[in-house]
Image (tube, rainbow, N blue to C red; front, side, top):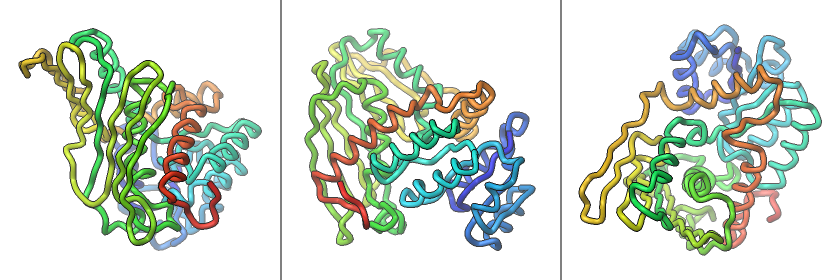
Length: 325
């Protein structure tokens, strides 16, 4: 499978390293940037065959099978529209789009044109997801009705985090992982959400706290932010103990404890190249089957998460330029 990348930033570099590690199954064939010089530098660094100074030019290349979109959130909608118009399959970084309206338009176009489009929320594709679910469902920590998850990095110097015109803020960049963590393991049957927020001078969220109440009676307590570093743990609280997932953004292990904090079980998750490989391999398999969505991140789930984030931003008064919520 030949992959073309749109955007030549840091996330694109991780994908290039990832695919190099699974070179028998896929390869980065092309890189496109609005700067030809930047694309050529990227191509040289990763030994990529084609470098393009425009996205349109790369999408005309018949050898490109899948396009990985690694641009800021604000550009995803237009980038995906362009890919679909050129009948190119898409693996788009999170957050999928700025808002639900854009996401629904993209997925409708994908269906009309019979083009694979999926969101690259990597934690949904990783084998750690099933291991966590199986561990919790085994009953080792009893009945689980509460989880907590946090994801904070000290990255306020990154323009993409603070600029409204880039759809900045902690929620779309970091909180999206917390929401996905909660819904992966507690489901989508949400009764209500309570939240609090701290905004930057530019009007985007720099810290948020979300409490998600499920109709089952379960509760998820979630926080994300970009002004400080957190432990990034996900913790399941059970009637007979608790289980700690190390790093909800790229899970490395799960450890179960009893009510006296005595370790019951520890599982290290499988060794990975970077973690991105699982979404790439699923796209490869789904393309071969002629389908247009990945089972690990169905279209309806992408829309569901976007609706949650829209409702939170509306409550907080975080609106991006030209947007109506």
